[in-house]
Amino acid sequence: MSQLSVDTAHHVITDIRAYHADKRDNQYLQDISTRLKKRLHKQGLLWRNCIADTGYSSGENYAFLEAEGLESFIPPHGTYKGGPEGFTYNKQEDCFICPQNKTIPFTKVFYEGENNNKKKEYRASKYLCIDCPIRSTCLKKSQEKRITITYYKEEYERNNTRVNSKRGSYMKGKRQSTVEPVFGTLTQFMGLRKINTIGIQQANKVMHLSAMAYNLKKYLKFISKTVKSD
Image (cartoon, rainbow, N blue to C red; front, top):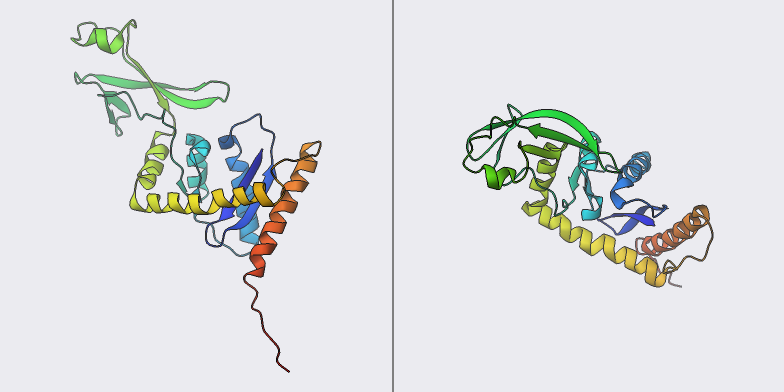
């Protein structure tokens, strides 16, 4: 798997590395960001915005980027929901209010799935819902109302606000017009269509050489040409 970072101002490749393809894109974002920020800082360059596609979305990544002082513009997965439909979240009390104005309190933080996704659970006592007029549709076969959401709900909401803003639309256009064409150029013209090497270290060398060739072509455009006259 090739992970690629591009400067949106000049289409210059700022980072590239080969990774094993046994994980999702979002599981590599923190490693990429840490390495890239250090390199840019060493060159005296400031990095303020991180633009990526939905594959890099996760609450952990949003929280990490905020801690690093970076604004994320990463669309969330279509499966993301801040809570069940019809329920209102009370931030101050950290609880949900159901359509019948009953309080579903916070109970615990837990980890779920093979990726150990950090989540929060809200659970109501079965006695709270025993006489509820919408019990059959709300609980179905359960005896009590249980709500699970991502631990990083606030980070999700802040990111989503940026993504859905006018600036977010501009950032999406920048990603589509810079990062994606660069990757296409590498695969079509710079030898990354197929890597005929064994081992991740050798694959990493091929990717770096392709990126160097691409950046050198870009560099030539910034060199002023002078013509000497006799």
